[in-house]
Image 1 (cartoon, one colour):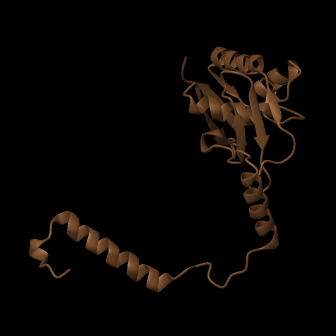
Image 2 (cartoon, rainbow, N blue to C red; image 1 turned 120 degrees about the horizontal axis):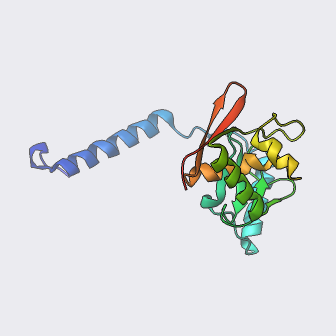
Image 3 (tube, rainbow, N blue to C red; image 1 turned 90 degrees about the vertical axis):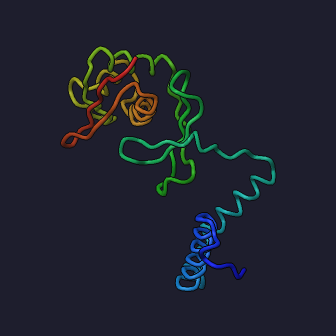
Length: 178
């Protein structure tokens, strides 16, 4: 193309500049993975994933990925409006690992009611010794694991029911919605 710059539209000029920048960056940086070996563990994981897909297995949709209050990823089925099925992830936060965790809807309803009633409450997700007066202690008194909170609270926050923040070494939950 041998047009004069004055004859180009703004969009055409932007496109030319963008293409030139991409080309130059590619020349300068190259492929950052070039020359690196694929670790056997990663290669095996990719092969299992591809084989599973070939057999018709369905992957986990992106909308079913969430993070705990500490930032660890987990997968989940359903939502906090019914029974919640949680799939904790491996150390890398990529693959589901261990057993799935079922959190019944009545437990989620209990968590909602306690947050609504308190307005503000310590989370207390420690399974062995939740803080006195915390939501975790209340769950434990119901015979349920305080660790459920690690999965339920971020999903309730996502739907606008509550917020959470770290204060000192603890997390505090604040009721914000219906």
